[in-house]
Image 1 (cartoon, one colour):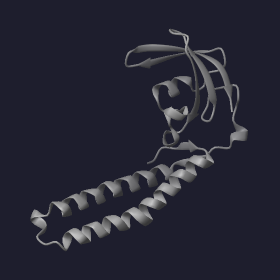
Image 2: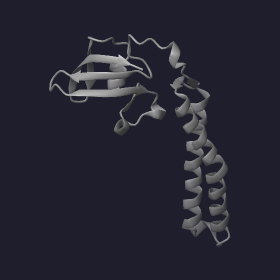
Image 3: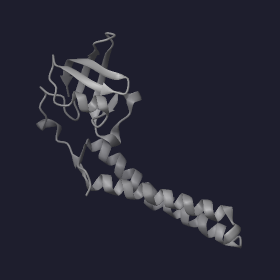
Length: 157
């Protein structure tokens, strides 16, 4: 059974495009590579054939994972979101209580996470710790180095 994940329209579009690329283009390339390696002779000593088969297996695993993700993907109706709490698609401004550094994150599903772009997965330790919090709350988040405390300064869409 797959887990339900919530995505923006842009995030779902990217997932579907990647799946289409893998199925329509990369599968054909993998099959062609296997056929070419098979034509080179004895398969028992053909490293090129083994590598092509392994690459095909990795490709099929990625396709399967994307299909599973998409089967549990739900489109978020941003107009129905509560702006008083940190939820998926909330832009949350937080302040680290130990060093005073302010950070700004957009909380997103795993498939859309990109820390360099300020998109934090709701399934990451910090993302989980922020979910459900309101402005003024202190989120105490367990990380490998101990407990981090973040004050919620602002929540927006």
